[in-house]
Each structure stands twice: as C-alpha cells, then as structure tokens.
Amino acid sequence: MTFPAVRAIGAAMSKRTLPEEAARRRTFAIIAHPDAGKTTLTEHILLAGGAIRAAGAVRARGENRRTRSDWMKIEKERGISVSASVMTFEHDDKMFNLLDTPGHEDFSEDTYRTLTAADCAIMVLDAAKGIEPQTLKLFEVCRLRDIPIITFINKLDREAQDPMALLDEIASRLQLDPSPIWWPAQSGNRLRGMVEMGTGRFQPYARKEAGAAEDPDHPPALPLSDAAEYFEQGEQEALIEAAELVEGGYKPFDVQAFLEGHMTPVLWGSALRHFGIDELLKAIGDWAPAPKVMKAKKEAPPETRNAPEPEDIIVQPGADEVTGFVFKVQANMDPNHRDRIAMFRMASGRFQRGMKLKVQNTGKALSVNAPIMFFASDRELADDAFAGDVIGIPNHGVLRVGDSLSESGMVRFAGLPNFAPEILQRVRVRDPLKAKHLKKALEGLAEEGVTQLFRPELGADFIVGAVGQLQFEVMADRLNSEYGLDSMFEPSPWAEARWVSGEKADLDDFMGKYRPQMAADIDGAPVFLAKSSWETGYVGERFPKVAFSRTKERG
Ligand code: G4P
Image (cartoon, rainbow, N blue to C red; front, side):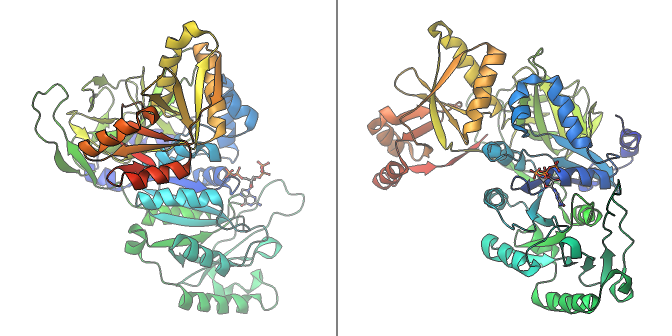
C-alpha cells in the first residue's frame, strides 16, 4: 500500500527551516494495560490522521509481517505483539510519529526503552476498569523521564465507572491533576455524546444500528443548549448541571502544568466506535511537546590520548548537526538475512539519505544509504528526517541500544535505562563444543536488548536475566532457529541483580568481599547478584557507601 499524501511530503519540507521542521513534530507513544484498547486506538488514530483508509489495517499488517518472518512464531502462537515499530503520518501540518509499544507484560522492558524516545504519552484507561497494574508501571517510567501524559478513557460505549471516580483515581494513585477537556454524557447503551468544558460544545454519539455493517459517522458538534434531540427526558439538564459542577471542581487545563508533569488533560471516547479520536488527535497536535532540547556530553573521539574531560552541552532540535540515539534494535526480521534494524531517534539536524554518521563510543563511521522511515502501513526509504523523527538504520550488528550517533561522532546522550531483571536463569548448550557459539549468540541477543547477560566473575556459566518468563521462551526459540543451538535454561541461585557504583576504594572493598556474587554485564559494568531481596537489603546496609541500583543508564 502506498500513501501519495505522505510521499509528497519530501517536496513540501524543503521550504521550512530546521527549527520549524522540528517544531511541527509530535513523537508519542501509547501506554496501556493489555486489553485497554491500545491496538484499536492506534488504528483509529491512524485513520483520523488519514494514514490508513480502513480499520483493521494495523492488524493485517502485523499478520503479513508475521508470515514473512517466522522467528516471531511465538508472537503468532500467543497472539501478542513482541516487536515495537514506529508509524509516521502527516496531519494538519504536523508530523506525527507514533511509537508502537508492545503491550504484553513480559515485554515491558522493551516498552520502557521505547518510552525514552517519546516526547509525550497517551495513557489509555478502560472506562470500566480505571488504572490497572501495567498502567501504573508505565506511568512511573513516564514520570521518571518527565514525559507529559494525555489521558484517554476508552470504551465509553460499554458500561463505565462513574467519570468522577475515574478522575479521582488518577488524582490519588498517580498524584496527577486531572483536567477534563470533555465530559461524557453517560456510557454504554445510554451514551449520548460528550460536552467540551469551557465552550459548552456538544459532540453527539451515533450508535450502530442493529444489523448495520458499518459504524455511522457521528453527527457534527453543536451547542449543548441546541442538542435536545440527542437526549431523553431530563438528561440534557442533568448534563448541563454536571458540566457546571465539573468546571468548578477541577482545575482548568494549564499547558505549562501538563508539560511539567503535574497535570493531565482527560479525553474520553470509544476507540472501537471511532468516537473522541479526532479530539484526541487535536489534543496531541495542540499540546504534546515538540522535540525537546536535550542534554548531552561532548566527548573526544575514542582514539584520543589524554582526552580532556567531556563537556556538558545542550542539543537544540533545530541545530545543524544530525545527532540522536538508538533506542531499539530489531534483529533478524528476515531469517535469510542477518539484518538488524537500529531504531534511531533524532535529536537534531536534517538527516539526508547517504549521510555518514559516527557511533560515539566506538568511533565507527556508518554510511546510511538505506534508512527506513516507517510510514503507517509500509516501510519506505527516507529522504530526509528531522529532530523527533525515528529512522531505521539497517546494519550488521554495529549499532546497539543506547548508542549515540552524530556527524562529528562526539555527542553522547546518556539515560537509556536497563532495568534490573526479575528472573535470573543459567543457560547452557547440550553440546559442550558449542559453548563458544552460545557466548556469541547470547551477546547478540543482549545487545539487541532481548535479555540481559551477566558473566559471573568466577566460573564459566552465563546468567541470563529477563523481566518476564516469556522472554526466555523467545530466547530459546531464537537460539535454536537463528543460531542452531539446543539450549537449556535452568534455575540459578540468584534472585536479584543490582548494578553497583561508588567511590573506587569503597567499590573495591565491597567487590573483594563479595567476589563469588559479582558479575559483569554486557558492557563490563559490575553487577551484584543476590540470593534474595533480603540479602540485597542486608548488604546495602553493611555497605552504605555503595549504591545498589535497579536500573542502569547506558551511554
Ligand atoms: P490492547 O492492544 O490494549 O491489548 O487492546 P486491543 O485494542 O486489542 O483491544 C482489546 C479488546 O477491547 C478488543 O476486543 C477490542 O476490540 C476491544 N476494544 C477496544 N476499544 C474498544 C472500545 O472502545 N469499545 C469496546 N466496546 N471495545 C473495545 P477483543 O474481543 O479482545 O478482540 P477483537 O476480537 O475485537 O479483535
């Protein structure tokens, strides 16, 4: 499928300056507990943005891809989406980059990483369920990274909780001021529509007739006072009253408070019935931040002797130099080619095809001749891209998650977190002659971010860490199909892994005493393996000068 409107963008772009191009980008992700409606909402946002023509295309594309790449067998069997991708579309003079995050709980680490590339998140809640465990986890990551959040309360076409109870839950559990932008007129079979706070504009809801093949269009918005035909006895008055109460009871929307992470605008709708979606897209366009100014370090090239201390710098999205970082590596999408696609989030500059970029930590130069831009339902070659955009860079293992790339090769972005795994297992191959192969394969998977790899200081075992059990299954499957290795995963004595840091003398003292429990991660950083969380606490108290951390910021 091709999208002429999207293809024509290249020509139109050239008239804008770099800062103007950056300013019109909206790079966002959707966070949700599984089943809240993330996939459905993604489709309907793409539909509202004119990027696809019919609902169902996102899933169809997924299935297409699966038949082409059978390494995702598990994905197919389990009916879950393991890989994250990016979808780009232009709408209302803005460029939207929707980062698709996998929804399954076990893959939250991948999702967390994707959030490092987003400037804004849409938090989808099921109107009947409110905040669920995964919502909370993802929210915490957004807060940690100062990502502002727009709330979309979905499935209004079903019986919902009381709207005020939903807002109160946001306020009390997330410590976030909810500011309703619209207010729903009931839910389920009695859903009449919603009214806009402040303006009194009413957006009616049209229900699908029994037996009809397609959803009807929702009628145009009109003043609530003129909307009597959409209500039954007393309902219109009740809504007018409720709207007054709500306007007095909640803080009005304040963009600054939203950008600072204190407030979330709350929108409502039904993704499945395409209700409230245009309003959501408008909110993203109007309020979601353009790519941020980013902090970075300017480092001397790796080969420099007696290099000076790195310098703190600020990267402006409209600056000339192309800079950015890799937040995800998607490998072996096609099992016949060992291709890896590094997802590169741009922080500044105008990227043009064929450009040479350097990897900061290795100094390696890379000619990016076949970058991929992910236009809605298809992968296409990108001609140019700007701050906020994500391009796929095919490579053969040169690029790793957390790598910084720039034209000078001197810019380093920090802050891509690795999360402490929650399950640690020992892995071996049945054929001992293949131990070397296993090492290579495990390193490859760890570089991609599928799992984490720890090499204990003593002994020859590999310890593999994952956030969830399913990651081990994906790994065993890939070791077999891609590397021809028959592997065994066994329980390990370790329950937790913590990155350790501190002054050298304190660290050396600690590591000397706990050598049998020390390991190195893929980058050689020291990791303490504990037998229980009690032990982590105990050791932490004994060595107060050593920091034990659940996350490690790469870069
Ligand atoms: P996820 O990606 O967050 O896991 O959720 P997904 O969009 O797959 O939606 C989960 C289920 O909720 C799907 O139903 C979907 O159709 C339904 N759903 C999503 N949005 C709405 C909505 O606004 N209203 C209603 N009534 N349902 C909604 P399913 O039966 O599990 O799948 P399917 O057979 O419909 O594909």
